[in-house]
Image (cartoon, rainbow, N blue to C red; front, top):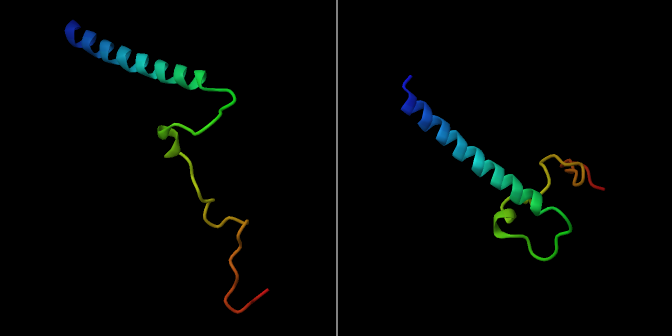
Length: 66
């Protein structure tokens, strides 16, 4: 393997690590009591419904009524 290719790969890995560290720093800085509306990038992560088959809302059998 030639040295120029090794340097290019190491620089690429360094850039990826730098970006990962900056993302983690932003997440760590955002901890604490949150007020107001969440940012747009966080709204996509929320789930509005519970998991399927949840015990909170049991299905009734067709022949039985409560």
